[in-house]
Image (cartoon, rainbow, N blue to C red; front, side):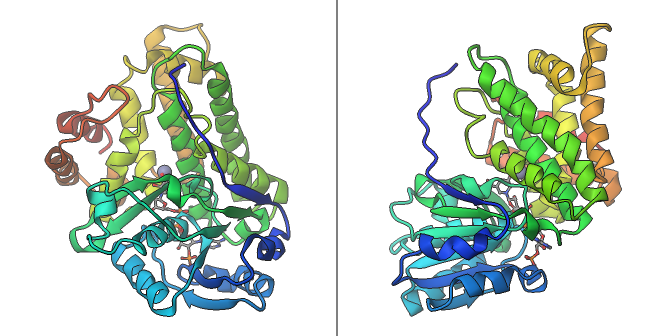
Length: 386
Ligand code: NZQ
Ligand code: ZN
């Protein structure tokens, strides 16, 4: 295993009715900004639960964080915080709301620079307001990690940043809050969590990381078993619990300790979202099978492991067949969840491939666990996904 140092400070409040307990996690003299999205929390009762729990606190509200949250919107929230001298933030929603809040709490302290530089120029985050989250969509793991992805609408760039300063103080994971999710969001979430595991597991063996491998496989098996059930029985609390906890674990840092990681599928997917508006999960379902196919030699050992441990594909066929069947099984699972896996399913063709390759070429990135996925390789990957 590679050397690592890692600490995850996020307190988790898991289960039914846990929103009622957030008050004891927030300082009594807090001047709080409640941040949420387009209003789903008003329809499913989560907003009311939060307001009941926060009774007596000074609260300002900031609504309208969009999916794939915009830098421009975040900066309006920063303005409210500064004007009203607020000192605690509560994010209530999916990954977009939580990511927006991570940027907001960091940007509040950027005085003499452009806050976008936190993302564009890796400007170190020196301070951030404390914040908590109430998660309503299992997918991103943002509730228990220190990363965020923000889109600058002005030039359609979708980029990420990480900082230990933006770990949530606490996150409430009440599976009942996910009962109201539309099927599309359930499916996107399952695909996203699946691909988070893939990015940290489907690389190459480092030796001595057996626990991370077994953890990763357990998360994948849970998603494969429970994802389709959530579509069929949306009000099944146990199914929702399994999905919520599995999605958190897919990206709370633990399975990535001491192992190589890829993240090419995400980087390519972010460009597809930024340029063409596809949902995050939709982009991943298109890109991952292509990455696995083109990089199949480099990922060979881990693809064998995935086939055996997760899909029951054993050594009774040729190595090439095992790999092909394994990649096929991944794609079939995405389809089973109702997520399309081809660019053409969204009306995109070779011009879209060129636009993404062009952008990544301009960025000069070399993606993947071996830093060998250049813009040309991206083009090759995406041409397979037309
Ligand atoms: O805005 P509202 O009205 O709340 O509606 C949302 C939104 O339209 C809705 N929704 C959320 N919870 C609901 C609900 N509808 C009904 N019932 C509920 N309980 O779902 C829609 C999508 O929400 P969003 O937050 O955008 O989805 P998700 O959680 O998938 O987040 C996606 C964002 O996270 C980033 C993605 O790039 C994307 O911007 N990611 C963040 C990561 C991280 N911080 O570690 C890692 C991921 O790889 C990902 O990149
Ligand atoms: Zn993701």
